[in-house]
Image 1 (cartoon, rainbow over the protein chains, first blue to last red):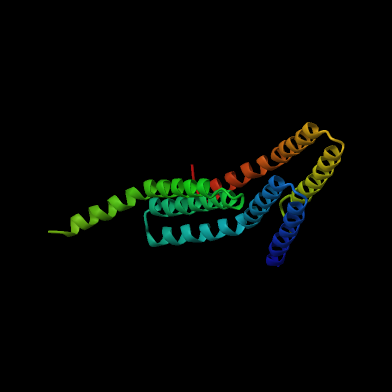
Image 2 (spheres, rainbow over the protein chains, first blue to last red):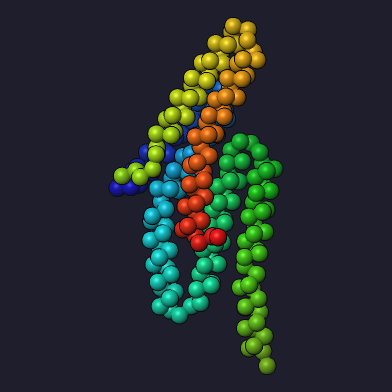
Length: 129
Length: 68
């Protein structure tokens, strides 16, 4: 079972971070938590890729334009990376930088979603007489 | 099985403990500037280990979510 490995990784990393923080080297404690987060995502990458494969197969079968699915996937990726960076910043006590990172994430997501909004508006205009 | 290098966490922990020992030792000996240099060098080494992993993470995210 993979869940035990993941939870074990998390618990071990937490234990080590607590010990290292006791030893007065907070920078390396931060790096250790960063490494733990990255390793957890790298362990989950295969499963996420499988889920995304199934989703894209379904959307192909339903005849949905591929553009929409890739946009949604890009938004999920941007949100994940932004959240990761913001949480690391917040862990280090830098709330201001974390807020800026989140703002950047939101702006980029907005930019990505503009074509979909335009498409929705165009279809509404087409429906109107 | 864990397909990634979990040893990095333990290596970082060992590095932190060694750096802390050096730091206290040098500080006790009255060499404050060397103590600070030791901490800085340890941080540089830790960053050199961590940055490739972060790069790998970003590449994985980019590949999975089709971000180009």
